Length: 134
Image (cartoon, rainbow, N blue to C red; front, top):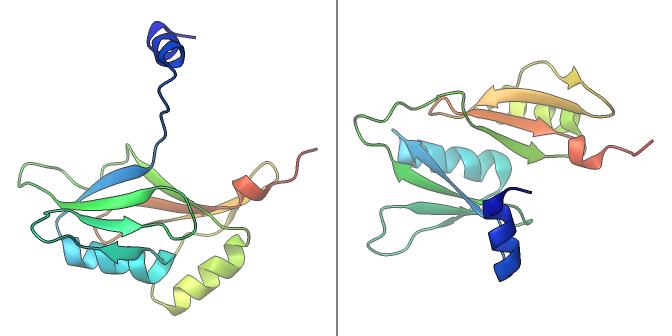
């Protein structure tokens, strides 16, 4: 364990990843995309520049923030992965709603498919969380 992790553990500070910030050129289009295709609830607070997308079934919330002119969007350094038990079924329903995923890929006991959101951010649906232990 590294020194920082040891210090956090020694002070018993609870740490959890509960929010991700997406910088978007099209805030409204991005909000609508995640609301429509992944069922997030939109939370807008008066005077707040950030639109928070609340995960109703647990998991991390997504905070959508307007990208500054100098911010390059759509980089491949982050991929949002959504756990779904039935990747094929999810992709079929998504296609009917206008979201096209890549071909489904099979991995070690699970499958996944990739797409991009309106800002070019990588997204994935994966059944990895539901794979059976050998």
